[in-house]
Amino acid sequence: MKTPLTPLDWKRRAVSLYPTKIAVVDGDLTFTYREFDERTWRLSQALRARGHGGQHVAALLYNTHEMLECFYGIGQMGGVLVPINTRLNAEEIFYILEHSDAEAIIFDADFLPIITTLVHRLPKIQTYIVVGDESGQRLRDAQSGAPEYLGWVPYELLLANADATPFACELDEDLPLTINYTSGTTSRPKGVVLTHRNNYINAADVLFHMRVHHDDVYLHTLPMFHVNGWGSVWVFTAVGATHVCLRRVDPDYILSLFENLGITVAFGAPTVINMLLNATSLPERKLTKTIRFATAGSPPPAAVIEQAERLLKMDITHVYGLTETTPLITYCEWIDAFAKLSEEETANVKARQGVEMVFSGETRVFRSDGVDVAWDGSEIGEIAARGNTVMEGYYKRPEETAKVIRGGYFYTGDLAVVHPNGYIQIVDRAKDVIISGGENVSSVEVEGVLYQHPAILEAGVVAVPHEKWGEVPKAFVVLKPGATVSPDELNVWCRERLAHFKTPKEYAFVDALPRTSTGKLQKYRLRQT
Image (tube, rainbow, N blue to C red; front, side, top):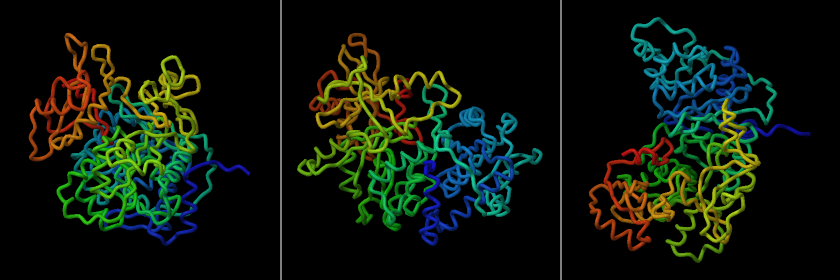
């Protein structure tokens, strides 16, 4: 007997085995698995009653229980969820809503000023569901005296008036479950179609490699809109673990949750780890429980990993992937042979992207001629993948799909080397490699050296034009509070640790580096500075 692979089935298991266990914590609110299940079915019934049973439904929400409910309530009725980045501007949100063919949207009341300006440009959307505005006052304020909009309803009222009875829905594992839009930093964002099977296999990898179990308490530090929280929205339900929601990233508040709620697992970009390391309350915290922390989004500097494991009691696992791979395809597997390494050597190993995950499929590094690079830690090629987590394609963009899926492989655009033990290490994005005097300079390598300096909080390195060498590295640095350092001092620091052609020729001190909502450094903006 064959049943479809869908992560939605894991909620059925959790409700059956652990109906009274706390499934979700969201501030002062808690829901058992039975209560969470009932809320998701109320959402499904309400949407189906409004004609949205198998349609695309967008969600513009923070990491709240309502967002978690959307993943299940929309998917289990045969619908497709379109999670939207909460940090986008009005035009970017409009583009995604229009392009994705969404016919309903569930959004936080914070976004009323944006959504009310877009209503008349979105004829496909018939239903607007507002979270956090039960009285309707914020809607009336946002409308500024305009006529009442038809199809607008508060989220809790919608659920209160809906039936909680489950209903059967035939699901096909090869049909879309979510459409996740890329960041679109250099062009229009692309909608990545991820199927039930894609999401199931990715979540299975996370379950296995992050050693997830029933008694885990997971903190949603990673946005759920970002590739479905790297699968976390499904993973912790699968074993009946507890989801702890987090509306906004506040380092001191996160540390208090670590301490008071017994958080055991969290995911996030290296920038989140860096924020925690520099939280004002860190010295007074009594962090005793080890937290398994998966990090990705940008290569984590070894210095940040070392400090996190020492000061935050984190067990760091470096993972790697892209939205197009659901997202995770490799992880830095820790083996007993590494136990003899020094702290610095350990951090250097953990900064690597590692080896392919068990269930995701095949990950290789190809030269431009299609041959695998040598496993010598030196020859550079492009990471390519094929397997069960590679996307169905870009929504309504077949020409873009054809550019990245060639010869049965998805080409990532990430350049890497492979070490003799098979561990992959990214050296740069193809577009971010600096070619100085004919030599390739990895901006990631230079950033790693800068992060080791005790005065530096963050660093970003890009190419700038040079009359003699064509282009040379330029470093943008953010100093730690109260720290001082001169460009000459940084130059000495780098020249002692890097080849001279890799040393930045210019240093710019800035208050902050431009990043996406998931912590990726936006180097194109640095190049425009």
